[in-house]
Image (tube, rainbow, N blue to C red; front, side):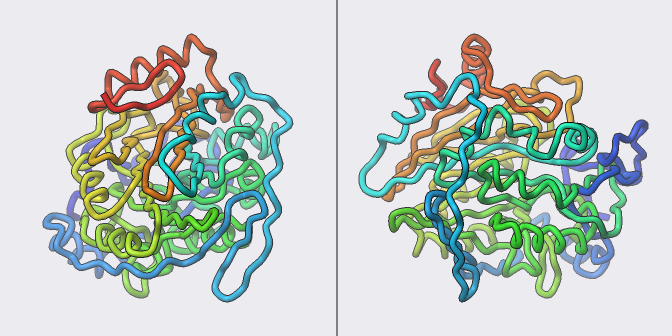
Length: 425
């Protein structure tokens, strides 16, 4: 089969994990996590890959936006023709260290007109060794020290890296995750409003697992991007609204283990971005009606500090098409920042809630706070986080300063000051 991914992008097939912790191994990572599909690879897969993953010439379907939701305080959710009221998010009882700072508030003083605060976190799973911890300490345990940061945003967005299902066909790949449905209510209560499903684990239990995940998210009131029952839905943005300001949020992945994972007409899957045309067309369409366009991308090489050429090219294409903010993930480490044509790119936020390995850089992450206005201006503020054993926790001032210095060194024409503000050089 055509090789979809570079060396570390691809999670190898059929390689057994030597000591499988509940879920993150091909063996069936013990609890419940997220889904994948393989059978379709022959029909749509072989022909699609050989002709399109290489040359990027496939025409994509970009549809009109799905749902419109309002921000956390007094929010209303529109799904189809029905509208339900959503109660404001509760604030955490734990005060993190540091607490949300004056710098974060100052970041919101940008541009003119209506303003929205968007908060982003990196990769999240509730499977494998993480699930072992959650079963002991409770599914709300990971948010103990960070809930204040997540709930104070108008909208909080995360990358959900595993299916939420108890069913499905385990896929032939090295690391396979599945999360329990019990994990979703605490995720919602912690402040997460939207999740990206365009990644390399969401179909670890096939299309059945993906469809279960989408249904569970819909029932919990968590919006989703980056996957769907077909390509039309997968490339559709979720539209959120605050004070008359419409924000379109997309999810795309350039890490797709099998061609059969790609959403297609009549076929569930993810919104892939090996071919840049479908994402670009979707962004261009959303730009016509949205005040702000946000892209969440899954891409890059694992444990590499620097974005590869594909990440940079795609980010620039998204912005050229009308994206105002691009937030990346997948490398499991933080990567730097770049401002391109006045728009910010965060190439990777790293892990937020994930299994802990012996690579210290994978323990470092940030909560990214973006204050954006209707005139498409965004300012970025970072909260430095150490994430180990399923408990992301704000760093102390000294460690945070060191992290910001490192991020400044690996950023492209950008720096991060001691307060966590990202600035153009």
